[in-house]
Length: 109
Image 1 (cartoon, rainbow, N blue to C red):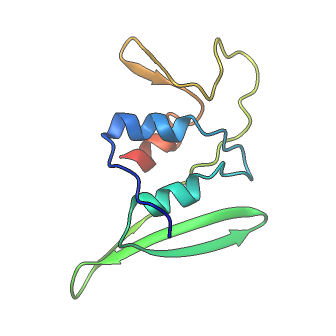
Image 2: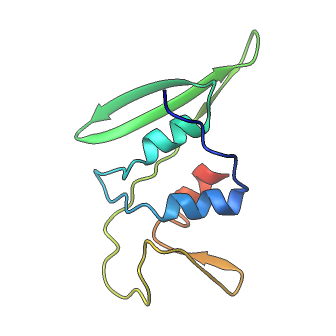
């Protein structure tokens, strides 16, 4: 059984996600991390075209249910970075790293 990670505040969680070099089709262990981080959710894993997908859903009684949807993979960082794109920096109150806007911040939130 995998140990449940210690809860993190949203900034620390985002930094953890950004630190993983999850260039498509690799997830750099983030799928397992996210699944473990949210115990009590039903995990559905789907692989399509060599890309892994993880859906976590949970019912809270009768009626509607909640399902998280997002992605943790990124396209290759390309040129022009002033620093390592997988070492998050906080600069002028903003977090800079590959995937900060699409979509690891959404997953952290």
